[in-house]
Length: 558
Image 1: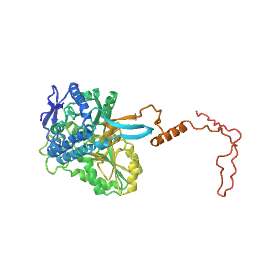
Image 2: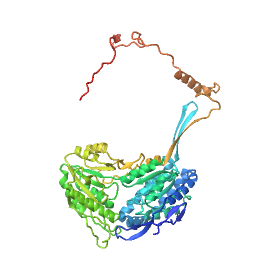
Image 3: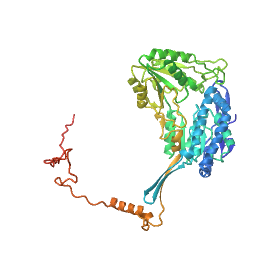
Image 4: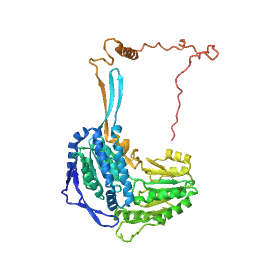
């Protein structure tokens, strides 16, 4: 597949000297080459989007969402082809890739509710004859800098909401996985959006910097590692842009003794090893509490060692490779670091070779046991199929351990106790909480939350948060009398104008209340105080003596 840019409704082959190889991580074969575009390519896309903005924002919202309805339908019709591209360039299993795109379709469906979600507010008669209105207007040109691990889904956390709200858009896919978005943009072309409304630019860091710095681009979204998220957030904000930057994670799960161990094991294994552990909601740290340690450890080790690893298009495969050789080497080095720090390795996935795919970047599911809190392996986001095990004596220590982490993307609890679940939900410092859930991925009609070093910004992706992010509020105060009234009506006194006269009188009394008499302790009370028997109560005598507050002497300590 040739990788092109899509700018102003046309496919453009960029004039670049450098390309990045796109490698099938299961086979090790080069399947495409990504052009590493310059800031000039970003400028062309931004100018096209800016020129298209005025016409698109003036398109009625009901008409704008018709394009999204059509896009959702055409993507569903091509779902298998999209999923196969995700499997080939990203390494997921075919079923994981199809499930990824279901979430993309759901976001398009929710964004089609923009005629309702984009409504403003109105208050009549904030003063006589004066009304106040809050309306939402689009921000302008917006952009997404997408990651490699969900090449089809993550742009749709943002893109449909921005378009439905009247913005124009630029997508920059990861240079590791450009094929999925290349194909989706061919579907976008079939939908027939006006020229310049949706644009695609490929590239790496120079392309990203071009997006961050371009004056026409008003809002930027990003998903990736925490270090890069901080850079994106700081750089874009310094150029006056709205930013939301999703960072890394180290997601813990607590296993209480009363949990259904077989169910918990299956769900935790799917979370930790699904998508080869390359997702920001993957469980990477399991904390057993009290008597749950031995049983859960035995079950999770069995689940890890029995998982079928291979090429995602082959039947029966449960887990694919990590994204490339560099990632495989990093994961294996971190497993070695954990062992060096004293962790056990009861299931070791290093050195994996899959028959027929010997050049693939495979790491089998790995278990690190007895990981110590505060160790480097306990703090580091591995982003691979590695589950670390810790043990604490009670739920108090477990929650303290969860909240001591740098990240706050997700935390989960497995239990049959409603009381424990409610306490965990209330006290855990994470944006997404799972109760007997391994991947607490919000549905499209909820925001994708994230706390601490897992997120930088205010508004998140999806749902009403996306509406807030891609619109700006304008407040209008309106007066429509024929004459200047000073806040009240001057119409002739008729039956219809009586309410205005009453308002004028009330306004005058409110602005000019009668003066209050000076306070006197001996003055009679306006309402005599009586006890239940009807007898007058004794009046408290006025205070006498020194009424100044006592002086407290503080002797400084040496």
